[in-house]
Image 1 (cartoon, rainbow, N blue to C red):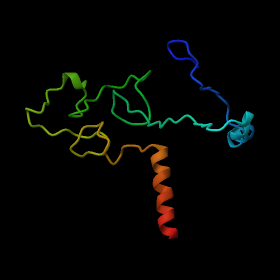
Image 2 (cartoon, rainbow, N blue to C red; image 1 turned 180 degrees about the horizontal axis):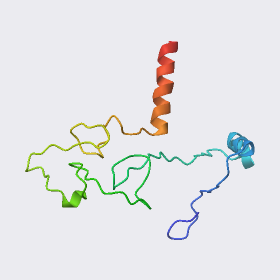
Image 3 (cartoon, helix red, strand yellow; image 1 turned 180 degrees about the vertical axis):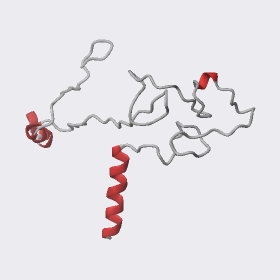
Length: 132
């Protein structure tokens, strides 16, 4: 890898498929050419399930989906840009997924799918607390 001024950066990018051999490489990487200070980082991507911009349901996207649009604010079948509900009108928004008074994309909704990483962390911490 190089900097913008073409000087070497001292980093190496290695893309490996998951396998037992790859795991051995990661474990024994500090023994290569007697180098010290080698840091190995696996890629990290927390992937949240998408939300459809048409019907406001989770787990899939709007691509190749031709359902009638549903407003994020009032749940009437029209696009949000055409909605008459504003902050000034004082109308409360409605959630498509749970029926509470918040917009459909609110991250605190009870029906909001959680990422697998967050769910596994919560599961592991609850197990640790019960074992103590």
